[in-house]
Length: 372
Image (cartoon, rainbow, N blue to C red):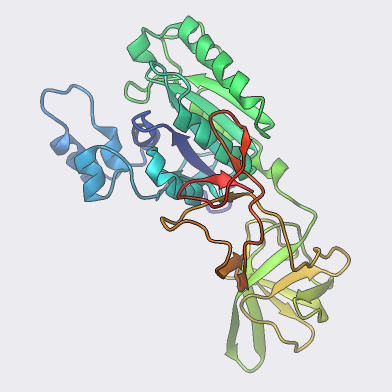
């Protein structure tokens, strides 16, 4: 079955270190037969001879330092598909010092799979990642209670963790949270239903990933098209390439170019496969306009009757990702989609304690601090 026209779901993995994120992704790829034969042979060679289980994390832990330490440091993007959907996975680090990597990986996700070790329950880093998930407005969360085999597939233990996470999640702005008990190493409830947990009657992880309605949470109204580059293969064609961030557009509609304010009408919506009658969120297209006006990288094309507010000041929730602390007296580069401008931090309103959710006074932000 051809999958090129199928829906794509972008999701990220999150959780504390050693909760089994890389192993889970490896299990998904292994059980959906998305592994090349050479890669499978490499895993078998690298698996310790006295270990009966395949080291599935080797599918995803690509950096030498990661393999030596048995952790994930970098953000790695993995791709697989089923007959129902394509998937892009951001495999992100669990260590607190790599929180910035986790933010990067999760920034474009439509769903987060948050792993919790059934032995340990909800930890501080679990809460940190949950808070970031809420901060980034990821609409769907699957809490995967992993390593159920190490707690005897206990329903009671699963229910305890569900209650603990729900208490924590009352402070989060996430509308859709589901819970799945599983064992990534053994394969329980990842792709196939587990015979070891007959008390669980819900969906497997993969079934949930295949059926979640990600498109329902995408903004279909406010058309926003950041221009990545101008394409001019010859004198008779001048198009503007980019990805539709939100909303929909059709040929003939009036658009405004920001920040200049020039207006025009969409002439054509072009792709490698031909022209489209409409473009929507996530589609990479080339727009041509009726008029020869100034449009370049950094411009944003919007529908004229639905323009965003333009301002010189804004409030923002931040996760500080630099090893050098934030300073209020120095200029920073503010990047919004494809446009860059100089900005200053005029005031730190508060820093958030992700353990208690209390707002604390702060004069600066250090690495991995979150606040406003």
